[in-house]
Image 1: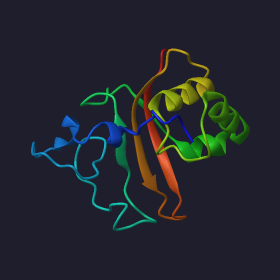
Image 2 (image 1 turned 60 degrees about the vertical axis):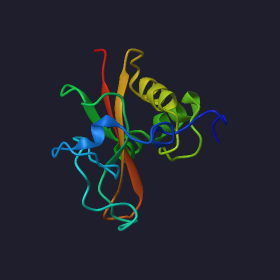
Image 3 (image 1 turned 90 degrees about the vertical axis):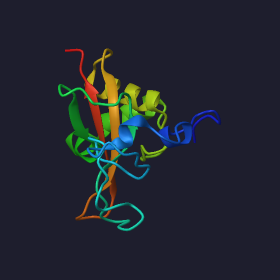
Image 4 (image 1 turned 30 degrees about the vertical axis):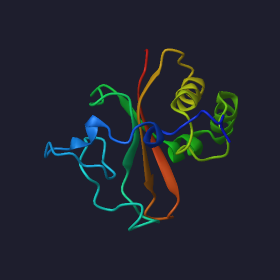
Amino acid sequence: MYGKDSKTFFERNSYAPWMLGSTGREYNGPCDIDGNPVRRTKSEYPYSYDCYVIYKKNDKVDKRAHAVYSDRMWESDSEKHDKSWKDAGGDGYRFNNAPTDVVEKFLRLFYGDNGLTLEAIGEGANQSTGYPYWVFWFKSSH
């Protein structure tokens, strides 16, 4: 897969300050982009869980950040998607264990924007198909 020193966000951080949600209390479960607990968790609803954040660069995501869904990117141009992912160093078709620098490079290649910065990554399950999808929040340099 990735180098032995590569770790996912949750492996690097046992607690993140943005997991406080609107209550202001510590919560270590899966949260949405605003830090609130998700209602449908992956453990309880493995084929229809709500999107929860697996990486967040800062406590709050800039309101100017774009959000794009991985499955929609693939549907719009599967060849470009697959080539960008491979050229970025991606392994397989799952983004949940990918280092954030690989995901950011993938987005830069896909959109042709070397100044693009990754703000957050979320994972959810498509309630129609049960397949996972990822949401990437990023700021464009354009």
